[in-house]
Image (cartoon, rainbow, N blue to C red; front, side, top):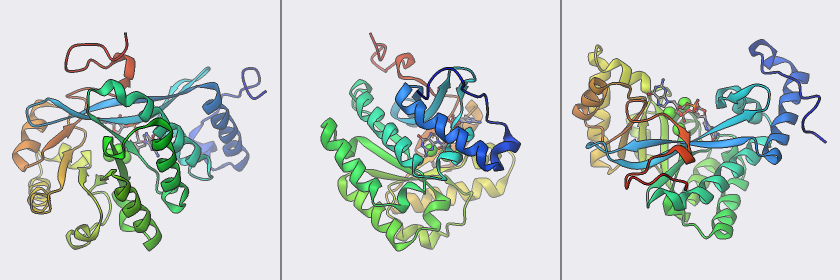
Length: 272
Ligand code: C2E
Ligand code: CA
Ligand code: CA
Ligand code: CA
């Protein structure tokens, strides 16, 4: 069996280019799904008054030897094969199972650009919704700006199909890619998440202030929600609000935590 003994402690940065090494991580990751080592942590997304409006689900791998592993260490490896589809399905199933505890708030999940290269993303989401009795309107699908600007007609068609199912679509890490304001108009998105590098810069960089304000004004016209990502201080919160952002996410409001540790607004713990 793939479990237990013989698991090699891996994930060394410079080994990532090594083919054999990657295959090893792939094998461990595949096993991790069955062994229940994956966790979806949740981070609040709040409104201007600080009240929680939604949660972003962020994957973690609780490795028996290495401890909690961040997605940066394994998503890129999973993206090199259809393993990412398997992780993506795990994430969405987990979110569907958890959403009942979220008192009507939406869960935002991250979908890899690799997943969007196959029709499976649409059929999988549709199937999981039917199997779990959930509604797509309870979920937001986040894709990065880079994926959106490089989107082929097929990828755009899948995004439209997901939107047709009722998902809201969010453009993640906005500002790190090359999405022109004109192209933005043509994209099927409901939410734009401004990359945290801009939020960090608001305090000292006038160009960042102008960029975020302009984006917020365009968003208002197009009825798109603007999320400020990576808000860490009261000052950043105030500046992002002044620039016109209408949703806020970051350590200032709460770090990603396992669902059992979420304190919901009505004061109950998410788990008994
Ligand atoms: P992301 O989608 O941009 O997620 C936000 C990242 O910023 C998360 O890192 C989050 O923990 C972190 N963050 C939140 N607030 C703050 C803050 O105030 N300051 C700072 N410095 N960081 C903050 P995380 O969880 O390590 O995830 C990293 C990336 O991995 C994500 O970036 C996303 O691209 C990817 N990822 C995470 N979960 C999934 C998943 O389920 N599927 C896929 N395909 N990718 C995922
Ligand atoms: Ca995200
Ligand atoms: Ca982001
Ligand atoms: Ca990111």
